[in-house]
Length: 135
Image (cartoon, rainbow, N blue to C red; front, side, top):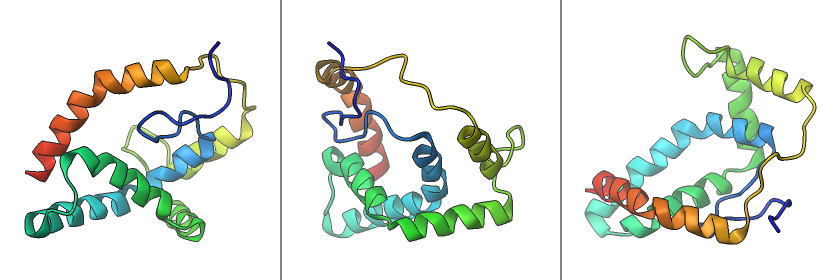
């Protein structure tokens, strides 16, 4: 029977997140880009992260950002009226709409075995992108 509780995929990524937490990650985009750039530059010098570990390192970095910094970034986004692009409302308005709507149970759930199959299917693509990025 499919799991209905939030669980981690074999890659360690959350299978389900509160919707506001997922939107909060938008505010971390520049921080994650900085981490990726530093990782690529450090790798060229010392080889600390390989392609196989890149995405886990990115997830660990994003998870390590303190809640206070996440809140600060959300405030800055609101003050700057940050938006994905001109065709979308500002991120803070989208968050307000999500918060105002009732949160319904998941219509689709995924078992650990299904997560493993999905990850196995996507793994070659993950690795190709990581190798191309790291050079």
